[in-house]
Length: 358
View: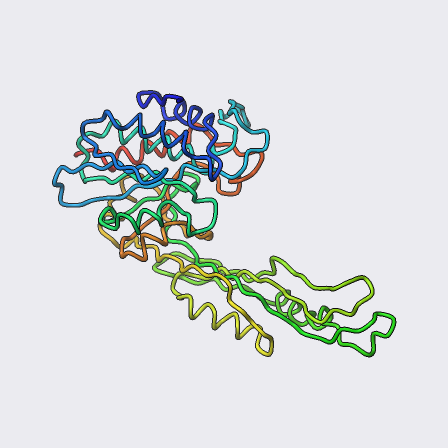
């Protein structure tokens, strides 16, 4: 089993963690290494649930913070092992997971080891299966097996945020808009009704759609409604009798799922609309006292999170949550995934300043 040296720098830990492949469904080796690294730490109670590792202090502090990060990555494509590169004279670590989100994981592991007496009690959660369907998400599974571990006054998710604080997140909804017709031989098309042609107004409405900018608790979230898949057709000589356009709606966190579904149905009024998947967003939660102290300590400006993240799980439990981690989210899952070493160090410095006793 590869060993993780938690006394190493956060950059060296990033390299070590990235060099342990942990594509979704293959996280056990990294989970074993994390458990082995934190188990000897006397100030932490270590709990394992599947390939999710929880380590928590229990010093009777007045407040508790949950700090979480996922240990899995999307599939590797020739970008492991990691390597050091220079971009415009600035050192970066290149490789799968450097952004999403093993550099954030490295910072968390180092601080978990070194902060034996933090100013608040901390529950560290390192979980599996974030990059796949929600039912298998380790944070979701843990919340069902051990809901008692989800007690906290504030939560931080180490998702890549360029070292800035991103509050809450947009919600997401997927729906299928269907059109129907009548099959016929394409040589006698006038006998039938072409369902693909009937979908033209659906695409036109999408092309004309102007996404809203919505202010929520001082942060402006940009919404979006887009076609992400289209299917239809029977054979090369048959007029199709059905066409399905799948759309994805990203909506501001001041709307619930029912409001989001109603909006999509309103946009496609007159068509058959089936909502197939939805997840509510998370309000910023930056008005919480701990959040304000956190912003001041890390010296970051709060921004909105446009993508959906697991902060929504904490928000649903009544725990204000933000995203804070090194790396540019635009490079997440990219074959040229890379993170500036300076950002790793800045995030470590910020979290350490906030969590260290005064």
